[in-house]
Image (cartoon, rainbow, N blue to C red; front, top):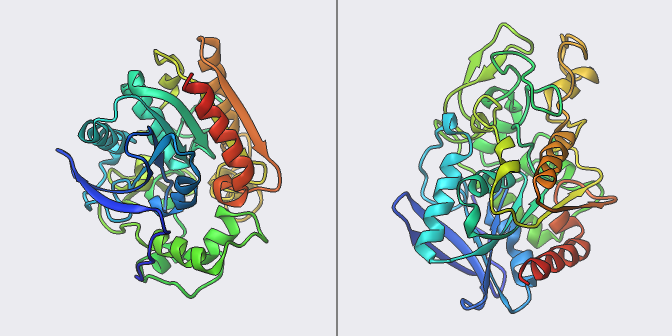
Length: 356
């Protein structure tokens, strides 16, 4: 895998914690108000470089590589803990850096880590920003806004749901393919809304970032179990995508955290990954005929991911919290890259208001 240089103004470093050695990208003054950025699945902190550089001088931007990604020490993920390995790693980093109170910005899978961290350590936060967040009920295998499992064994979630050709291309370190089952093609088809393409230099950096995802036992995507229920696979016990299974991933308790901090929820209107009609969800793929044998909407409806997030945030608001939803038109899964002006305007105003 080729290692792309970091953008000018970005500092790369490592921090030893009692749990593992964590790789960081930082920008801004060390004396600034900390803003911590968490990346999503099949990516790394490299996807945050532009956002780090765009922060006003009063902030210090900090973007760790999560366990299983980038240059952070390669320790396996215990899926049976859901997002807690990552959230506990973040808590150890916060302690090691002596951050005090900070803003937390999280994209996709990272938003699940942020929700778990907020459940465990709400008093350390100034604000939360959820960008294209994974559902509080995980990915796959649930049927309604409350996250009710479609089947008791959580079929259609976990490590066995990843496209095998995409996985093979990841393991092979494929940089050249540009189909939807190659890393580059997946990024340009699903992370971004076509025909958006970033610059050639940044595209190479992002592909390298994707390929830095650790694969194999305990990492991406994780093991699987056979299921008697459609589509024949259920979650295993280790690795990244199993940690996202609703069997282990349950964050409805976020609605009850105290103290509550302001929440910004920002997403693209054309997101194909986190959506009520996600092209990565077996319920929707079955409905459109992309996976054979679908038992029908009464048995296995698509997962209403966006509606599930709204359900939990509405409960958060009913309990005394506040949240703002920002929907960006003509935008996919990565607003901070596709619509950086709109994204940063919303984010910086959110940080400013929360710092009062």
